[in-house]
Length: 330
Image 1 (cartoon, rainbow, N blue to C red):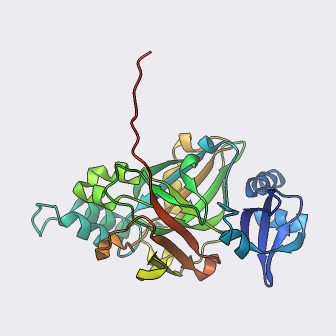
Image 2 (cartoon, rainbow, N blue to C red; image 1 turned 60 degrees about the horizontal axis):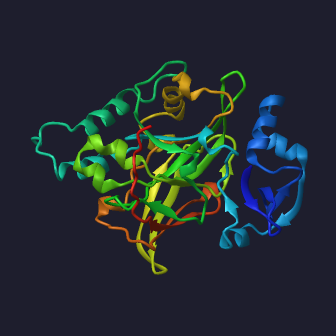
Image 3 (cartoon, rainbow, N blue to C red; image 1 turned 180 degrees about the horizontal axis):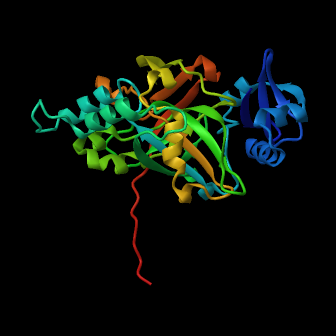
């Protein structure tokens, strides 16, 4: 079952489920988070709770998208309790993309592996352990909290001090931490893990800075298992016309790590198992327009789509105004 969150024409929150003939409202439901809490309490799934509440009237989700009424497929009243994180160098081909970026300013001899290639090699060798065993830990990064989560159709704001603002088409896992500290996976969504690739290219130790940017997920939350092979398309539109377009692959068939291994190495930290917290964890990509020499501009529109996830994730690029932050001593 695929779910979306939206605001009705009358200004009320709604959750809708995709059916064979379009979307229908999930009755007596204002949020996916509400469904998730009910599923944990009942010991069942989000999809089962939605079906139990029954589907009501049809809703025009395309119109809601066009009118800016779609919400991220998961959110919370307190955005500080949403954690945005991710892993890199997890996809076959991702090391070649990253390495090409870094070698442009690297003085290393050709015969020496960069740290990116070493990390990728570790994943190839031990990122898919046998069931019940723990594999090698991946590269990991922090993007921010829920204040940096952007809805489908809303602008991705690049800070005025940024060197670049580029897309990263990914799949994100969506999790809610239960009352006893158990992580529950609600499902998966498309994600644009928006980053500053010029800053990262200066020195790979700037990766942490380059990731502190907003990101977008959705529009649809896909419940259940992630398909082993995902074939999608990432594109950039400039003034309504395609500037760049390229297929991207995801799913475990195209990855050097299992989803279970990536989840283990995130949730092994107690700080990420606090009851009531939401985690949006992005699993990486091997496809970047920046690696093909594209420089984005304000007004460009990022579009990421994959048939398994329904509607495309579409977000325009904007640049925020410069800010002067004054530190006060008290």
